[in-house]
Structure formats: structure tokens, C-alpha cells
Image 1: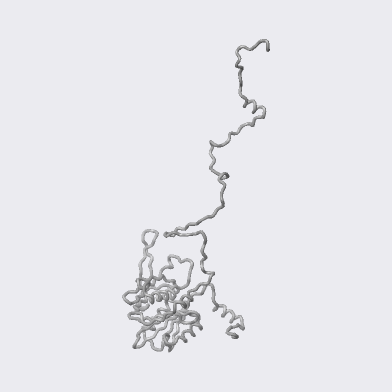
Image 2: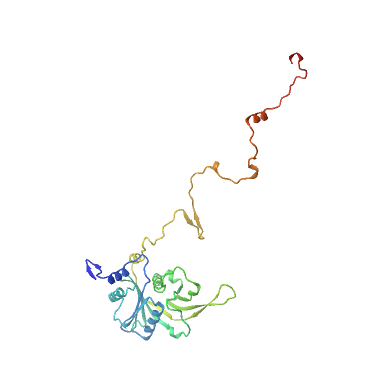
Length: 317
């Protein structure tokens, strides 16, 4: 590929297909995540990154080598790896005396860091500690957020949006009932974030609707929020901008009430009520019969008159 005036032009069909895959699309691909560890890590961080990779597969890239970088101070290395692997999400794990067992969740826009949230692990239970069957790889999870703080606190609202981007997976038009088996429950309580993973079991209930039981399959995290890096409101609004093709146009003369009932208004031309077709009744129908001639009709209509003189004059006969 050659670069001229900041425009990369392909020299082969392979490079052309590569650039077309990276080009902006109306319907974007699934967001991939890169999972990496810093220069100093602990066993807890290593196992936690592996479990997060297992939840995100196959839309994730796991870096096994250490990367000596500090995302809050210099994010150029993250932006480089993001552009190399076409990832818009990342998780960075590190461990030191000041911030032990540290995880940084973040996302990028146009290969530049948009926002980051630093979470410290206070308690962790891995996938291998739960001795039961797991959900298949690539299962789309159901996300449940509990706690008023996700709607009130500005930072936790961004964290909620970040978790939705990270765990939601591929957008699908429909999901079968048996596919709703993985549940991620995230709770905000007393300045802590609790993440639990469950598997839904469909049991017989004696009727058509099955009885649902939850079984914890791990991993389980107890987080505490540490440092944050938030994008400005203008940049955040730009990152959420959608093309006009995907925006649903406003339909005229259609409204909805508070209960969701749909109402439509029709505009019709002025109608002549004299030509309005009404319901026909047997009593109003015309009788069918022979049509009389003109002479017969006149005689029938002429009245019968009798002479009023009782004694006619014989001389006039």
C-alpha cells in the first residue's frame, strides 16, 4: 500500500479487501476487545483476565506478554494495538503496592481513548472454582443492572454504558428460549460494584411455561471504583452519532398514547352524502310488474263521473 496526501491507496486486491474491512459501515461489526496485562501482575489479575477473555470470546484478543505502559498517563501504546487488531474495547490488568489487583476497562473512538474506568478487585472467585457446567462459547448474555446509583451517579452511568458495550455481543433479530441461559448480574451498593454470572435452568413446571432456576457459574467480582477518565460531552455525543439511514423517520398522522396504543389519522375529500351507499331493505325495494301503455295509463288515472241530472230531457236525445 502507498500513502499519498494522507490517503492510503492499495496496491493489491488483498490490501484493498483489508481496507474495505476497516472502512466505516452503516451497520458496524461486533466490537472486539483486547485483553492485556501490565509489567507487574499478580495471580489474581492473570486469572481474572483469562476469565474475562472466556466471557468475551470469540470477539476478543488475549495478549500473553507483558506490556509496560500506564494508560492514564500515556495511552499511545493502547491506541497502536487497537489500530493493529481493530479493537474498540480493552481491559488492562496491573498490580502494585499502591493499587493492588487493578483492572482498567476502557473503550476507544476512532482509535483514540474515549473513556476509562479503573476498578480494584477486593474479592474474586474464578471460573475454575465453580465445579459445574458452563455456558457454550459465544452465548449472548442477559445483562441485569441493580441499584439506583447506575441512574443517579454520572460516573456509574458511564460504567453501565461501558459494561453494556463490553458484554452485549452480537446484535440479533430474535433469540430462542433455550438460548437465554447466561445472565450477568451487576449491582451497585455502598460504593462497590458486584458482578455475578449465572446460568438459567429450565425445569418442568407442569404447564407450558417452564420453571426457571439460577445456578452460579462464575466468575464473581467485588469491585471498588478508583480512577476515572471521562470524555467530554461533545466528544461523547459525537461518538454516539448515527447515520441518517439508521434513524427512524417520523411518520405523519400517527400518534401513541401513554399505554402504547397506536392511533392513525386519515384525511379524505368531501363526500357527497346523496351518493352514499346505505343498507338496502326489502320494504324499500320497487315492485316488479308489467309496464302499462300510455293510453291504458291515462284511462286508469281518469276519474269515473256520473250524471247529476235525475230527469234528462227526452227532446235532446
